[in-house]
Structures are given as C-alpha cells and as structure tokens.
Length: 548
Ligand code: FAD
Image 1 (cartoon, helix red, strand yellow):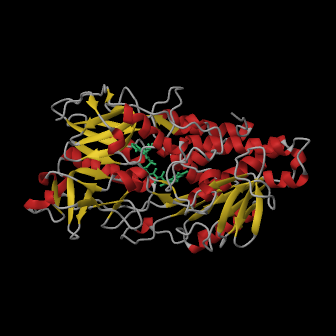
Image 2: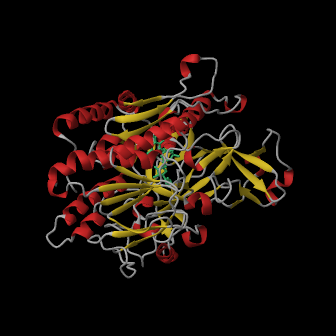
Image 3: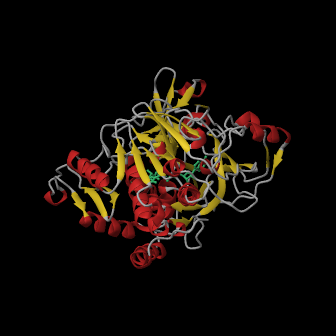
C-alpha cells in the first residue's frame, strides 16, 4: 500500500476538469499536506466516491471485520431524494431528509472532497477538498451548477446567491478497492439560457432555492409597484420535465401554493399557476397507460397546467416581448419560449428533464494506464501479456454515457481493437453505471439494490462465483397532489400471483401507502419519527411557509 504522505502535485497537468482559476492557482502551489485516515493493515481499504444512495448504502453494509471503508464526497450528508419535493414545499424540514455521513456508530471514514482523477497504476485517487471557509457544505454541482455543459463560467451571473467553491487542497488517497458512485448531473440538452437561468433539483441546496424563490415571487407580486401583468408572470411557476420528479414537484408545489400560500395572500386569488412542460405526448411514460392518464386528468383538475408535446426553445430574464436581458435580476420575471406557444412570462423554471454524466466520468475517466494483473478479460481469463502497451479507455454508454460494468459491477475497459477487459478492484454503481447485462433504471431503488448486493458478496468474498446482479422491480410510486398518488405494481408474472396487479393502486389509498413506504424507507429512526411527526403536524397547523 502507498503511504498516506504529503505529496508534491502539479494539479493543472493532471486534471482537465479544474476551473481555469483553479489551474492558475495550483500552478504555483507545489506542495499539499495530507492528513488522511490510515486504514488498518489487516483490512482492505475500500474507497467509495459519493455519499448518495450508492455510496452511503455500501459504506454502511460492508463488514467492518474485513474492510475499512472511506467515503470521499463533496457532500457530508446523504439525501433521501424521494422526499426532496416535500422539503421544497414546506411539508418537511430539510433536516428530516438528510443523514450525516459521519456517525460514531458506523465504522466509516470520511473526507469532504471531490475526486478529480484516478491513477490505476498507483491505485490512488486525486482529490480536491471542498470544505468552504464559511462552513457551508454543499455539493459543488449545486454551487457550481454543474450540468453536462460543465460548471458555470464566472461572466454569467448565477440565479441566486451562489458561492463558487474556494480552491481546495489537493491530495491523493490510496485504495485497495475503489467504488465509483458519483451519481448524475442535470441534462439541459444545450437549450439556450437554461444552464444560466433555470433551477435544478438534485440536492438540498436546490430545494431550498426553489422554496425561497416561490416565497420571493409572492412577495414581489404584492408590492405596490408590481403591475397586474407582472403579477401573472411572477406567479407562473414552470417545471420542465414530466417524469416522476417533475410530477411530484408540481404536485407538492400545488399543495403548498393552493393550501398554504393562498391563505397568506388572499388578494392574489386565481393568479398563481403551475405549468408542467414535456416534449413527450404523455406524463410519467414509465407508468401504465391507465395510470399515466389518471395522473394527467387528476392533476389538471387540481389546477396544474400540463403542456405535453411542448418543446422549450430558450429561457431568459425579463418579461415576454422585452428586449433580450441576459443579466439575472431576481426582481423580474423570466421568459420561457416554446415552439408551440411562443413566449410566456414565468417567475421560476425548475429543469428536471433527465440525467447527464458529471465531468469526473466524462473527462477524468478517459484513456488509462494500468498494470496487466489489475484486469481480467470479460470471461475471466487473463488478458494478453502486452495489454499494458495497448491504448485502453474506460468503456462507456453512448453519448458520454455512464460507465459500463459487467454483471458483478466491475468497471470495464476497452482497447482500440474493441477487446473488453474488466478492472478487478474497481466497481461502479448507481446513476453513473450501466450493467451491460440488463441495465436497471436510474433510481434509488436500483442503486440501493446494487449497493446491497455488492456489499453482501464482498463480505462473503464470493463475488466472482455468483451469477451476477439482477434488478428486482419492487414497483414505482408517484405523488400527484391533494393527497393522491399512483402505485405501479410490477407486471412480470414470476409465478407469485400476489405480486401481479394489472392496474396498480391510485388515489387516496395509494397516497397512504406512499407515505407509509417513505416513513419505513427513511434511513434512521430519528428521521422516520420526524417525517411522520411533521406530516401529522401539517394536518393541524399547515406547512412551513418561512423564507430563509
Ligand atoms: P446520488 O445519490 O446522486 O449520489 C452521488 C454522490 O456523489 C453525492 O453524494 C455527490 O455529492 C457525490 N459526488 C459527486 N461528484 C463527486 C466527485 N467528483 N467525487 C466524489 N463524490 C462526488 N429514485 C427512486 O427510486 N424513487 C424516487 O422516488 C426518487 N425520487 C427522486 C427525487 C429527486 C428529486 C431526485 C433528484 C432523484 C430521485 N430518485 C428517485 C433517483 C435517485 O435519487 C437516484 O437514482 C439515486 O440518488 C442514484 O444514487 P447514486 O448513488 O448513483 O447518486
């Protein structure tokens, strides 16, 4: 094992993903001191990149007898993403849906840093510390607003009071086994103005911004100087993407606005609107036709404007028809332009159209050098003796897609001749990985199963003897507002008729099941109680309408 020692690094030559300012700064910084947790020599050091569904679950399930797990993540907490929409709409406190990565009971080390590069020869990860001086610890993809087009450039003002991360210290961390679970970032499809002006919805910081902006728009709307037209624009809240996240966000905001905000602003009666856009002809395309139709009809009857088959062309600040304003000005509305209805004034646009790979996957993991004994061919036989001389790359899905892994979640490499090999000690799971043998959906459910499966087989040391991971669909749920939800029970007939329900469950019963499921699935007992308690409290006193 490499000693965990201070190293001289020239980061600018190593990582192409550092912002230019970072590279300038690092060109002069030649030495970085690292004080890293040292692994117990008898145990294998498993370095896990990411503290989300994949990384957090795996770290808690590895046997402390055999492994010494270390999480490296810019986020010092785990987020229970299925309830992020409830936190954004005041139904839950933000603290109800996070779990600290540091926990005295879990024998897991943690470093708050972002992985920037991997050296397969030295078996080390190059990291950049992401602890900001102010003590605010959020994900850099929230703070830098990383989308598939890369971090925002400084000449374009971000929408809200965003701080870019300060330059962090650079250090290397050695591993025996490496697990890559850095998740995904928002996909904007290169739509003009979206990266600069839209809000994304992946993390606690995003949910806080959404809630704050809704409150801000209501206060702006009642200023004596605000015209009726501007009121309508400011109180039109657009959500782009009618998958489960977009639907649940629209539904939760509907409850928040119509049940709680309107009680505070009765003078704005009938002005607020929630508009959901999607290019597809229907919402929730992964649900059965009948459930998807039910969702559309119910949400429309609850006051949500659903605009399917709409193509967003651009997003900019300023009211419709005004000369183009690029500068962010939160006192104004924005203009969303679609091919179908032209320009529309809106107060906020939340962009939830899908996943793209973070720069760490698309850029840092490219061509690799590795010792021949660290790989094996896909069928288990050793790779050719001259493998080291050939040019190998990480094998990825189409269009800068996720890392391709084999059935045992080993990361795959490919050479110019099209041969595939797998890295024995490097694994990937979750949104940034795609098993070639039957890709599960990019969901918490699938990621949780992968992490559990990998931990269990690493603990039993029988990974290569097992048939490989297979996803078991436990069903899909979506909240659609006003105490109604949908639940799709898996259709595959596996001989167990109790698991076969053709039309799923919908309406108030499904909403009760939805709530019970998420209380049960919340990680800690503390949060199970807090979530149940807050939902009960909301019935008596309403949701939290404070603006921080
Ligand atoms: P994540 O959970 O996103 O975790 C990625 C981690 O990697 C983060 O901790 C991040 O900080 C860290 N990271 C990023 N870059 C680096 C780096 N360079 N170095 C080190 N660490 C890094 N799925 C469901 O099944 N049901 C639902 O109801 C559901 N609802 C959702 C609601 C929302 C709002 C969202 C956003 C997602 C939802 N999902 C749901 C999807 C689910 O959350 C994801 O599929 C799941 O989080 C993927 O897990 P992951 O570990 O791959 O990534």
